Each structure stands twice: as structure tokens, then as C-alpha cells.
Image 1 (spheres, rainbow, N blue to C red):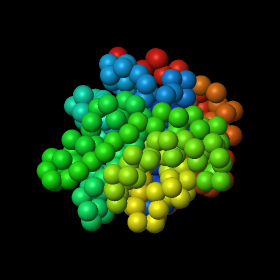
Image 2 (tube, one colour):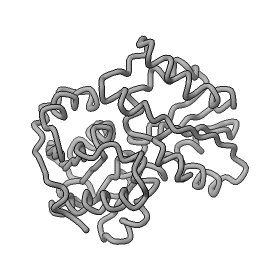
Image 3 (cartoon, rainbow, N blue to C red):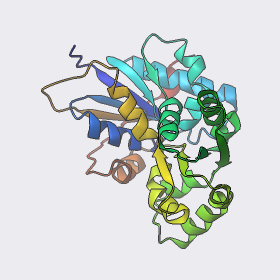
Image 4 (tube, rainbow, N blue to C red):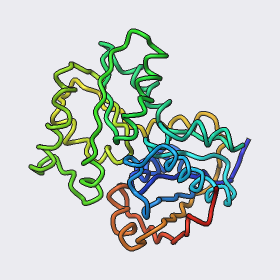
Length: 269
């Protein structure tokens, strides 16, 4: 059946735009409502209850619009708060953990998988738990990469950038030595560092883009819009000008974003 309602997407900031980029690619007919909580980024260093509270507010804002599903384009929320908030809503809510783990299990040949993410994501153990449940014999190694998000948001992701190279080596040396053949980029900011990570890890390691996997997964179960060109609206909780300025590098296309400001504290519990 055809359903022309929008897909809601949210993240703590700009990183979720990499998921929007993939939604544009696989479902160009869909309208999208995007909310970036730029006033409270990052979520990865927050406590569990704070992340849950923020997620309730983000979800409440999106559900004020006429949407048919919510994509949680944030590794931290998907790991820490999704199960709680999903049970409080009737709309389908899709995080990035489940689709990314399915992809990693399809890709790995030696059953050694690495996971990188924010501190909150890694502390939750969400990726390892799902991987081990689905394939008990799998070996995993996980590392928090707290400097990756500020690097990306400051436009520092070129593989030729010496600072980027040093930080990538610092974070990923143990994972490389562990012998993984698959690495989950467990934060939607991290695909912008893909080339630098690939350069360090080598051609034999498959990189799993969690935003891309979530977009592909949503495509499998929603009633899709047809015979139209989708429109995307952008909302943020702070600093519209900075969001508009940086959105293009995350979207990989001329953005023309013109985000609107939202008082997110007026929503939810």
C-alpha cells in the first residue's frame, strides 16, 4: 500500500544526516522530518536516564508531525534508550544496532568483529550482546572513540590530516591487532572518517555504516510513497547557521537545508 506520510529521523546533532543521505539514496520518494538536538550534543557522554529523557523529547517532537516511522540515527540512543522509549510509542521505531549487527554477521568470514562508537554506546555493550546472541561463537572487540565526533563536526576527517591519522591509529591499533575482518562504525558521525579508517585498517576489513544499514532496513517494512519527489525538513535545537553550514558535508549533496529552530524542552516528559 502507498503511504505518503513522512519518515521521522533524529540524532543528537549532525551525524544523523548520514542516515538521511542513505534514505535519500534508497527511497527518494519519501518525505523526511529530521531533528538534530544540536543544543545538547553529544549524547555519548551523558548518563542513561538523561539519554532516555532526551529521547522521549526528541520522539515527542517528531510525533507531532504526520509521520509513519522513526529512525533513531544515533548509536548512543539506539544502544541505551531505544528499548525503553519504543515501548512507550505506537509508531515503528528503528535504531541502528540491529541492522548493523545483521550486516556484520553477513560480512564476517573469520567471526572477528570490531565495534567503535561513543563512550555511552560502548559502555552499553549493545552491539556485542546482539552479535553474541545471534552467533554465540563470534569474537568481538569494542573501543570508545570520543574524539571522533568533535573531529568530524569541526570538518577534520580527511585521510591526509595528520591529526586524524594519529587519533585513528590510537583508537584502532588494538582492533587491527585483534585481526577483525569487519568493523562496525557504531556512530552516524563515523562514516565521514571512513577513508581514514579504511586507510589504517586495510582492504581486507569491511566497514559497516550503521546509518546506511538502518535506511536499508526501513525500506523493507514501511508502506512507501510513490510517484513523487520527497521533501526533507530540518529542525535543530540550537545554532541554525552552523547546522546549515555543515549539513552539506554530511549529506554529500547541495543541502539547501534552512533548518528551523525548536525548543525541544517543550516536548515530552
